[in-house]
Structures are given as C-alpha cells and as structure tokens.
Length: 556
Image (tube, rainbow, N blue to C red; front, side, top):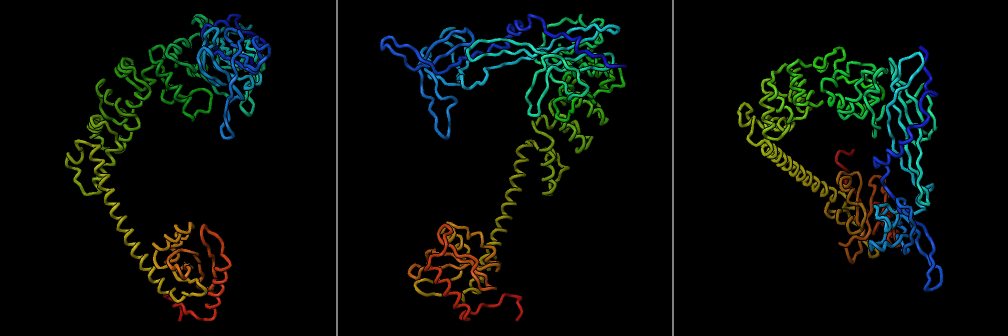
C-alpha cells in the first residue's frame, strides 16, 4: 500500500488558547530582572550620574538602582562586570542572583543584559490528541507535539510562539512519524515551522512531559479505537508513542491495562527504554509472553497467582522474584512467602538459587531477612570459615547468631594473619638487603679516595642512602635495590672536614669504570671543585690504584 502523505493534512497551528493554557499551567512562571548600565538625573546636584537601569519581565516596569562593583580577579571572574544594590532588600545582587522585584514583589532571577545574546528563551513541549479524516480511509488517531516558546527581549518585553515539533499518526498496521524540527551534529535544534514527513529518522520514542486535556471519546471510530491510551496514562505512563507502537504490533497489550496491570506495563516499558540497551523503536518487553492473550498467561501466572498479583500490586521486580522461585521448582505460599521475597532484591534471590542448596532456600531467605544482610556476605563468611577448617555442619557455625559480627571477625583474623606474614616478609627482605649492603660495602671499599679537601666512599647502609636523598632532595633512595644487587654502585662525595654531611652523590659503572651521574643539592650539576676531584679520582682508578674484588660467579 502506498504511504499516505500527511504533511498537508495535519493542522498548521495549534488551538488559539494553547498559549493561555500553558500560562495557566505555570509553564513560564520564571521571571527576570534584566539590568544594564544607565544614567539618572540628580536634581540636587543638577547633573547626570551613573546608575543601573533594571526592568522587570513580570510587571514591565523599569527602575534605577545604585551601581556596585562586581569584584573578581584573574583567577575567579565575576559573572558580570557590575551589579546593583537592592534598596528594599538591603542586599547587593549580580547576574545569577535570586531576589524580588521592588515594584510588583515577584520572585525573579537577576540577569545582566550582556549575558544574553538575543534575549532569554524558554520552551515547553505540549502534546495534543486529535483525529484526522483521510478520504477513503478510517479516521487516523494523531498525537501532535507543539513547541511553545517564550521569547524575552532585552527590553523585558515577552512574546510567545508555537511551532510544530513532532507528530505521530496511527495507521492500521504502524505508526507514522512527522517532524517539525531537525537536529544538527552538535545537538542544536532547527525548526522547520511546518510538518515534514521523512522516510528515515532516528526511531526513538520520547516521553510526554505535558499533555493537553483530552477525552477518550476521541478514540472512537479511529485507528486507535481500542488502544486504551487513557488507561495507560491513568497508570502513570509518559511514553505514549512507545505504548501506541507496542499496541499496534501487540494488540493484547490493552488486555493488561483493562485487567488492572497498567502500572506493571508502564514500569516494563520505562525500564526497557531507560536501560541504556534500547536502540529505539517498538518496545520488546521480553518479560511478557505475547503468544498468549489472557493477562495471567501473558505474565506466566495461574488464576490464583494473578489474583494475588493484582491485590498486592506486584511491580516488575516482584514478578521477577516470583518467577525465579517458581522456575526453580520451589513451592510457595501466597501471600506470606511473597512478602518475604520482597525483602531481597531479585538479583540476590537469583544468587541464592544458583549457589545455595535448594533445600535450604527458604531458611536462607528467612535468615538473611532476620540478619538484615545479603547472600554475598553469608557466602563470603562460609568460604573463610571452611578455609580455616571450621565445621560447617555445626548450626552455630553455618548460621551464626550475628552474621555481620562473625563476618567482621573472620576478616579481622585474616587481616591479622596477612599483616603478620607481610611483616615477616618485610623483616626478611630487610635482613637480606642489609646483608647485601654489607657485601657491597666490602666490595666497593677499594674505591675510597681522598684529595684536596674532598673524599669519596661507598654507601654503607640503606638507611644512609635514604637519608642522602632526603638531605639533598633527590631520588637516590630509589637506587637501593639496584645498588644492593650490583646493577650499579652508589658512592658519596664528602668534604673532608664534614665526612658525614651529604655533599654530592655519584653513580658509578663498575664494569666500564665511568661515572653515570654526579648530582648535588636538588639535582644540581657538579661544581668546578667537584668536577676536578671526580677527574682525579677516575685517573687514580685507571692507574690501577684500586683492585675491585670479582663478583661471585665471575670467571677467574
């Protein structure tokens, strides 16, 4: 069937009272005090003086106020170059402040004229229901969404505009969308000011925030005659187009509304659409068996279960809880057992069914409810108890009187054991490191040298190395492991008159007999004095005046 062109058939403008109705709903109740620099005549001084001119968007009256400095600095700029003093409120205000108009007393937001490029605009999206007569076809049910905007000029005057935004026409087999706007890649909206029917678009059905009053009699004789949209709205539904698209594909959806399950249908649609996994389009609602027509069978319940569900007003998670337990083959007593299941999230019930013995399911649920805890805590406690060799066949061990306290105690015992092991490990590493430092000291002692008031010697201990880094403010402490293992050699240059005071730190390549780096306070470079001493020391080494012991395992 050829697609009908609805562009010329849809209304070009909404009802004339739409703006007035929007005002009555207080959709545009926010008012503003727009201010700018001005001048006012001072009769006592017979001169014009600087002031601030303020206009109220509610009453339209203009008044003058005393100008104040906005303050601010290079690190924190004020929102406007200046503000004004509110005489009646005895307060200073600036752009962004909330105060009252001294003339009409309305609550208003203070706005500097420079903060608005083209004035202030506020929009509200209003959805309306109507029917559309198409020659040769059944009347179409139509949802039209109008963008009502309030434009506030810099002068404080307001005007209102209405433009077509979105429209949805319900046909016999599908829902057709018309658009009155387009979105740019940056997310901004451009209005067409007329309806445009496109073949391709992003098929995402949004929520209705404001709905113009309508009577369900408008559905009679239309393509949506039996959709029960009024019942969907009465149940709190805001995704009108999502529901209509679902009903058009799955007419049995109306049965859930008629049988008092509207709140459940609303929740299922909202949950799917806000899950982040939804790609747009018609809701799937996999929790419902669409092969069935009767509400009880659609939800996988028998008559008695369905009666309890309606009376207790189960939500979507309640239904999931019940299905999990019923699907596991466990018997249930309604409504007592359902009240117990409501105390635990569905995902927790699923974990208990998967990991705990089925025979202990109800005992586990009652126990966790009494303990005000969850399955993960009980599971973790039992795992640690088993690893510690405790007898889980003992009721007091398996079901402790205070689960939280027992769990904390198990964790504390584990923590104490772990801390003890780590302390022993650190002590062992420190002892090994100390021994290696002593070995390195013996191996590098032959490099010690003194001349011209300076001396050089190897590092003696790790503590000395750490202190060297602290005193000279560099990172030599990070070389401790490499020095101890023989990957590098750290030596200290001192003044002979102060042999224990850090002066320069030298890293030496034992194999090549070269200096890798030599740094002083805050990583400063060598002074001429230190440079000359370093050269003299290297020359002394090259003449064979030191004999380094061979490393263990080296060839003779």
